[in-house]
Length: 178
Image 1 (cartoon, rainbow, N blue to C red):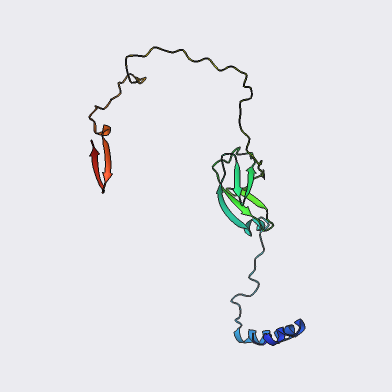
Image 2: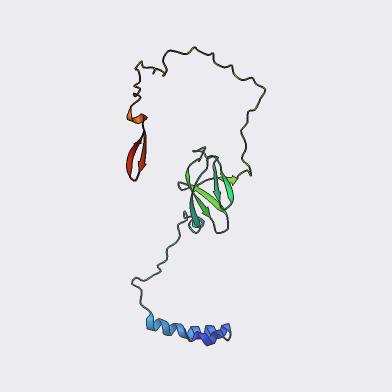
């Protein structure tokens, strides 16, 4: 390409003239005939979402409040016909070339909207309602441990059982502390 260096110092027309003379010589020297005649390009499928292919893809997890955080923005995932909540769902956030964000779950694009700036706090609607009455107190029973409903007495380990001893690991050895 040393032929083009002097042409760059002049005009665009001069560069095009030099390139027009250079390309036939280059093709004659280095050109290789195609193995198969015809064009190697394929037509794009109409079903192909080219904007979804030519974008940045990021993996994320939806929060408990159906939101996804990305790049300082919070997107609210709206409920779909087949799923009301996307909490803990693994989603893909696509940052499109126009700057828009699209959230996809298992190949389906989800409807999103801007999340509210602050999360609502759940509170009791009417605080003037009285508290429910406390259950009546029952006298203590003789047993110190609750009895299971099936009538089988639980096994209580003896006071000198090894589980009741304190153990400590030092220098890769287990030692009982007395």
